[in-house]
Image (cartoon, rainbow, N blue to C red; front, side):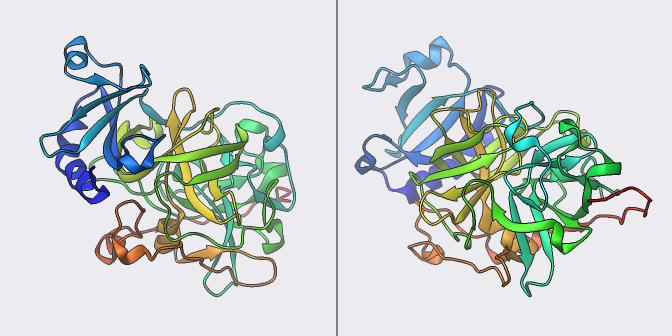
Length: 368
């Protein structure tokens, strides 16, 4: 039985070479057999349908699933190949419930720019509890991955939001996505025109009392997204290096993310417009992971730990009338248990910088 540490080390050895193949979309660490966690860890490879040559070298799973194939590396670590489409950032699809206008703004509803709609993931605050912001993705709140003025609308422009009637604020800070270097977060914040425009609450589930520093393979989450609405998912793999297609956005094309989480649903959990939505624990409503991309069928959500967002932006979950607080996972994140996600280490954290957005010029539009 392979340990999660051994699986992680093998993933590190294979990732760069394997991600150069067009048929492979991601490689991470998960369970050898999700139905029997006691069988230990495996390297998880997300790939297109395998060639007949590759299939002849692999052993099909006992469940005879055409979407799961196995091989063993010479190190003894199992490699589980999961059939998957390529991964793409989420854009726009029309589902009515969570794309309507709502005041004050809460998490789970449509938000964006005059051209784009995504999801308001959380209402957050700075460490002093003075200012409130909306947590979402770069490609939801930012004008083409640049610091240019980006007006924030609720609902987003793809849902009928207009600058004259629905502007609630503007993009405040973001992490610039890179075409050449590895990425870790698709992240941005929006600052409201007035603090009262944001309410520290989450659609359907209510108050979010804090966030996890760490979660593990097999954890079960739930969320509300602008498109798929109320969904449930299970963490299938972590430490996953993935290629995500951004199309023409910012001239990025397909870029690489390191150490991401793949969360699987039985029904679609990540479709166009769900970008920015935040996964919560099923018990306690603690924020866990930020969704930003998915597979074509929506069954796989590509996410990163919300702890990373809080580290980079130096923020906390906003609570009604008081500061947000950070809630630790059941095991210390510093234990380097590879079954769990880890906070960003200090050296890497220092290398991930946020960029301030340019202030938008004032106008006479009605902003409510």
